[in-house]
Length: 626
Image (cartoon, rainbow, N blue to C red; front, side, top):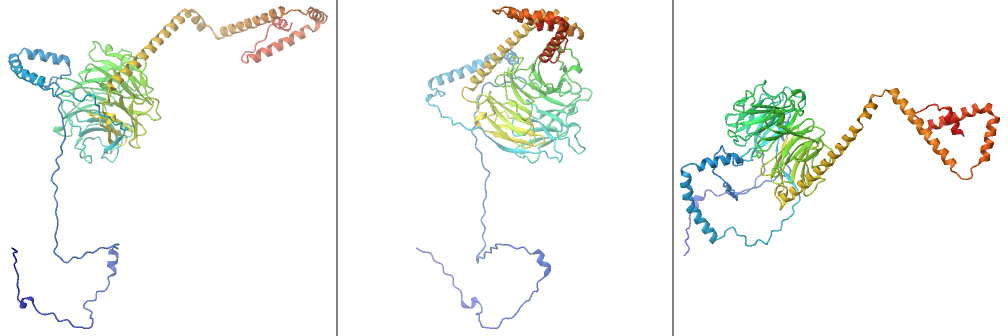
């Protein structure tokens, strides 16, 4: 059934009838043009105008907040440790285990857990959830070409640009980056140059999250791996300072000038300790200082980098970089301005014994030192025009090195996820990524990051994002392809085999060189008296000895020629007799012949030996003329 409702209206409600008629046109309004409005006229071409006789309606849309779903996995290896116990340190972990086993509730807890564990073991034996049913089928891995893309660019907000000297990633979440800014050019600082350094949030790269205000520009800056709110920095004037981000941008404490370094602090690294407040620093003044940030009034320990082991500060080598591996808590290495790597052991009894080894191989300052996280005995050094890979077992030469580049190398580091990949930066603004299992002579990937020189480099712990700082304070964040940050099949074994092979080769060469040096030393000792005699001779004695040896050589040559002529068959006796008669008949002319022979022999000798012009004795000249 249709429901219809009819609206009705009377005729009188429609209003008055319209009467239309013809009439001449008339002007209602005449508006004269205003010349002043011509300047405001804007020509619009094309002009679209829409006219719709109907009610205006609008349409609205609303987007709800997008829910991002992420697949995560948890790999629980061993937990339940207190904060002050590092399970990586075996001695502390063993001591804590012994202490825990002596507690009263230890046996009760183990007895209670035994029942649960027995149930889980029986269940696991019944159903093997970890069994691989299709082990023989392997997924074909697509070989992806090495590549990288820029994900963010952070610029120095100051008008006077400074060099981004050091980068440090947030230890817990890699969404924050601390950058130290400083102008390292001598006497190039201006009055309006800022001392500030910044902590950046990568989700908002246009404005720093926190401004750090040191008393002198920061050369190095590091997050505390145990407490992400604490940072330590080394200043250009040699002072040390630390910040707590919860207390603002001003430093909590600064070391005194008298107890600090005398030169810029190029390295500041946190140490593994119970309190998490210990660190050490190195500078070009030739000192390594240990600090407790809770008391920066004076260093807790000092080491002078004197490789002669005399402990003299005037003989110390200036430190340009510092290296520390947490898995080797007592060892550290220092790269110097003289191109020498100094290996040190902090737990040695005396200061001279703390310098254990030196490695020489660079022609200029060393700007980066890094141990391979997979093979700690292998370390990388970057300086002059090359990057070199060293083994602690070989001291005279590196086991691998890159070819000499056209531009100076400024920084470098190992990959955190692949043992055969490392990164280097150059003065021409290029980032090189090397994979020596794939290619040894050239980098696997070379990227032109910017036009100005690159000064610093830092890789995230996941190995996928790398930050590059430039001379003008620009920090470029690059995401590298998965092929360069994913551990390949059997890569650790291949890299280890290559390191061992090259180390063995260098050991053989070192043994050969030592053998040759020993033989040379024995030979020099045997000839020591002769060498001393030669060294004690005066210039005149040396000239007389040379003249005597020269005449002996001439005499021997003439005797050899005479014997050769005497052995020839059919000697011409008649010719000799005639010559003797001529000689006897012309005795008056004999001196003339002798003088001519002397001149000829002297000319011949001078032509053969242009630097020796000596007169020959008369006897030698007469014998030569006969």
